[in-house]
Length: 82
Image (cartoon, helix red, strand yellow):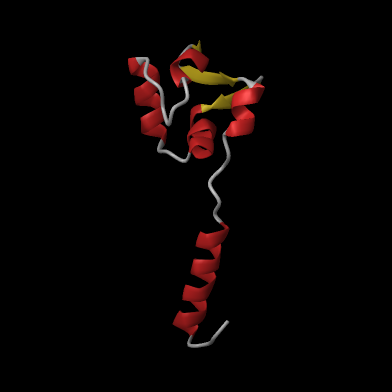
């Protein structure tokens, strides 16, 4: 079981942090995952205890495409080619 803060869970689910907070508050699922049942409240902070089998299904967003796009855009702005 892994403990994640809200922003980490949102990054793994590829959604905004507000979407995870709303789903937790309403007791709904977020991207098909029961985030409300994973919630562990510690004062004002909410931690999420994500089971290992669910964590293996959740993948972080692939940002390599965006990195390549920004590299090409920078080269274009400089007037060179990459």
